[in-house]
Amino acid sequence: MPDRTQLSSSATDALDTLREPVERNEGLSREEATTVLTDDGIDPADADTLLDELLSKGYLYAVNDELYVTPT
Image (cartoon, rainbow, N blue to C red; front, top):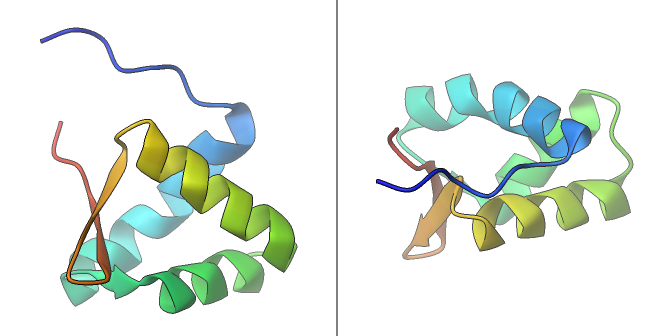
């Protein structure tokens, strides 16, 4: 399997922040994921941008409006 596209350092931090809540809840809505990130001190607009990066680069995926961490 080819290497994934590198994430920005802020997106890597966001993924680390989201990993446990996503797995614990078996998925999070985008709104819930944004809340997790903003509760961690990330600006809401930046949280939205980070979620877009994680989705577009394949680190998160969405099914029925729920976000999941892509298995490695």
